[in-house]
Length: 460
Ligand SMILES: Cc1cc2nc3c(=O)[nH]c(=O)nc-3n(C[C@H](O)[C@H](O)[C@H](O)COP(=O)(O)OP(=O)(O)OC[C@H]3O[C@@H](n4cnc5c(N)ncnc54)[C@H](O)[C@@H]3O)c2cc1C
Image (cartoon, rainbow, N blue to C red; front, side, top):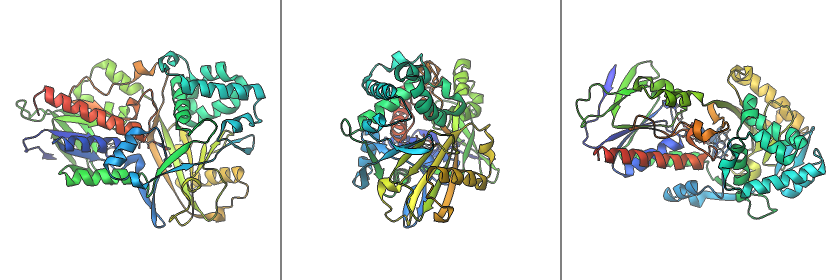
């Protein structure tokens, strides 16, 4: 076993995960003069934002857009000089229900959605409006989304419209999801609309959002930070070799691709991975039992996302939510937002969230491809498999934490009982839902918390 120790006379902060959260935190700490070491199990930066080459352009493995209200993303892009390549688009959305596609971009579309009785369409519209104006989200904490939606929109609207959407995201846990989660969606979409009655504006960065994590990576390396790929953090413990405060307090053990292991020491640690993974790797820290219980009680949905390049467009819609029971729950025709540009075809993502106990999770890529394609033929009868130029599939194990009722009391806090160790994963984002903007915000907050810790302990 190799051992790497810090010799420079400035504190070392170890960051686990080179996604947008970890890289944002690392850059901020580096700019403050800290020595940063980022450990990443994959062979590249970016995490869920990582991109690949398509035609003469780049594209994320998973669909992404941002909202006009994503202030932290916008200000980071300005700092990185990327905002000049950010474009805003008005898109058309649809809902596939009862075997047909309904336009679903504007309040008027909702009023025309004939799958629901008119009164329930009206109530649904009013609920969305009311929710987007509600500030006191805590008043919703004890209710499930199902209870709140049935009470406000009516049972039929819930069954036809909302239950499929909740199931699409949370699968078997759909009935338990907090009303705060759905409130937040209404609020976000409402404030992103240019004005009442217009469809919302979505932002996309030319060349993919992977450019943000690429630029962060370059800046961290140029500033003397270290990012190690293929290093999977397996253990976090106290550094028993530390004799006094001048020596790093924590030891992080990694396993490499060749099964060898290596230890690092650090004065402080930020973990950006799931709470469950963190609970396992931090076992030797003996964190308080109630905190460990919180870590282990967070449930995550996995995601399967297939991206296909097509010779011709499927429809005029960017986003199509699938309410009927099909193998995927959303079809995102990315090029209906951005145009086909240099992709060399039309880009469509098909995505589904699921529990890893679901047999689909362990199906081969080919099997998933077959079932997704049969679903696509159902939604777009003009589509033919011969239209496909190429495709690829990405599985994300920890794609979405389930936000249960009373989540403010269930959420494991960013400040763990071990003062020098901070937790900055998707499960720490609340009442907002996980997303690039909140990942950046949390990355900055965790870096600030580390700086405070180092200051209080006179390590800087
Ligand atoms: C289907 C889908 C669609 C989305 N669409 C949008 C969207 O349109 N707009 C938006 O704003 N957000 C969207 N998001 C959310 C957004 O992608 C995430 O919120 C964000 O990328 C999370 O970044 P992160 O750094 O917190 O996590 P990640 O990107 O998951 O980064 C964590 C990193 O840690 C690494 N890692 C894991 N375990 C270890 C270990 N033991 N040791 C070392 N490294 C480890 C992983 O390889 C990964 O690189 C979407 C997410 C999904 C799943």
